Length: 438
Image (cartoon, rainbow, N blue to C red):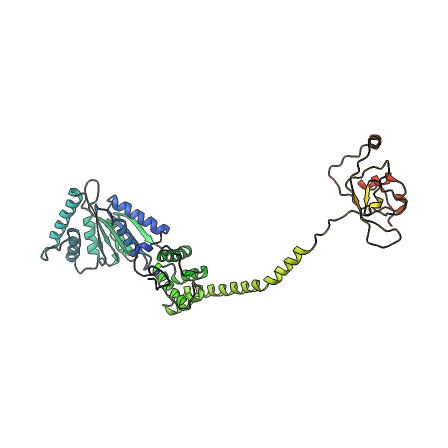
């Protein structure tokens, strides 16, 4: 199979290969329950489902589970449709004994011969005898009655014949019409269609198994997997057929990914879906077109957005909001402040620090040029610190506030600036009266 895109075997074969069985929750649970029931010798089991839901593949997987069991005799009946009950019993007896019975044996003789063989195998040889019947909807009601009679071949602890029926859903009302048979069913399961996630998982699982140790050369896009699910309705058989056609179209086009276009082409090549599926596919196609247009629009805006982001990153950082300015007119004492020029950094003795205030002049050009001022914490000498503490002790304690309030904007005139260094202490708290504005 190396000629088929490098796969070791066909990934979407319609043969019931148990190696491709996807361990979904319902399939894994059903297979496990069947195996436990058979090994415990509990008798009759029933698995039904719509066409193409994986019943035959599950049947082959059950056979595979007992293939290496040396104490089990498993017999498979693929077509249970017979013209008479005698013919039905002859086929079963030939499977159990390994040889064809006499053609002249009647119905009662066939039953007795089969019963003796089952007791010999079950009691003397301690073997597990299993009869698996596929396409169970073809069994005639009179032959179902014969199966019910076979369930009476038992010991005090176990049934001598274990039966598993796989059939379509039309088998259910036939069995329900026979209460004496329906009450003997141990495991009864109905397989449902796959969900969208299970459909995509099945596609990926089959590609991985078919590729072997290598990575799959062809993959399905998420949109393609969703389209396959909508078109197939979750039926494994329809999914396999659609994936096979879509993959062939992808290989013909020389691509490595199966997209929505290939799935739509496969739909046109195969049987048309139901009206509801057709409407869902039309909606999916419209959604894909809308998403594609959005992607192209965003991709076209990519260079513009990247250029704007580059300009934003290269722009200088903006300075934080600053407090009001003070006039740097002659006569202003600048003790405790650092002016923009190094020549004015001298500190006057007796000046008091005013923590937490920064001053900037407005941007104007006048006789009294305002200079940027930045506060530097003042470290007074020993004598100045003592004088500051005495003055602080003489001042009354400020009233306690329940919540801090933002300081109002304060502007200083040249008359207030002439008051000396003590006037600068008002910058740290709100003014109590009206102030002259320049």
